Image (cartoon, rainbow, N blue to C red):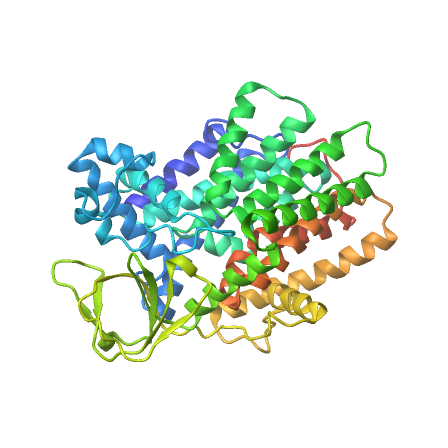
Length: 501
């Protein structure tokens, strides 16, 4: 905690002194206000830790704790074999079972495995583990420092996201930064060692770089940086980042083009055409549509949400009931277990993952399985018929659960109360947007693009994620665009000629 405090004071000093080496410099919001924003944002770090400690007994069994533990394990390789550590950081390692790296280090991790389904919506845990394995040289094994670094990276991304959008909000710049920085879900989850901090860093840089590319400059350095961001986006939450690349590339191109008339119509037509073309390509290459791929992901998520002990070997992925008496630890192999005799379980073979298989009584007590995760049944699971032939009902439920549920009267926990506050903001924002689209004479193109991005992402999240807690976390990058679209129509006085102090 002392080390994290020292780093916090250093960050605040550098923001105040030189806008953190001019990375955060802005002509509308000065360094003093940026310091205030970051100081308020960093409160999320202890809040997240305390809430998970009080409600769930700690972070150890959740993503933040597992990423932290794996990052320290990977970092420890550097002290015994720096060459292998460097190879691992850049993805050139050989970490197959039987290698020294695997048997001594990887075997002790829980999140390093890429996952059992490398398909649509796949996102790589290894990126965040690699980043924090490097940061651990500065963090010295402190979770609070790691969370602080993650929070600061998200703040950089938030600042660049603000810079990419502020031209549409003359006189409202401070409100734009406030919304992005303090949306409850984004504020909360970027205060932990999670993917959200890195994702917002990438998203902010992507959108600011795309704006520069389509509006003013096409320098080789910017193009190389964009290609790097695209590569990372293809691995780290592509359902969000690749979608953002496609939509906002098209938006900025149409917006800044002097040759395109009726910009909203052109934007929508091209976007729909591209979506249909990509869906057709998916059917041809993958033998499944986007909708079918989303349902496959939803099934996997639903299995995890039911809770249980999840094990993995080279042949199959196994789920047992949440009972430690059903398995036996393997000696000298942390995170490895054998299934006891006559224990029932369900499993999926890697060669045909869509088929759920059942074993009434286990007879194989010698096979060793790696523990993927063990979870109690979630208390915020959602049950509705995703496979219903009534597409209107499916879409309605996706939007209901991804935008409006819970709402105070049906919230059951502290996090759901927080979600209820955010949902109330969403409802008011949608009302403001509806009134603005019909009555406001301002250019409707920017808020229309924001709404399309948000609704597309929320539809996907609502379809693939049958758990309200996970939805609250995953939807946060989408919700900010709903609130920003509402801000666009609000009649706030303009003071664009002065720096906000």
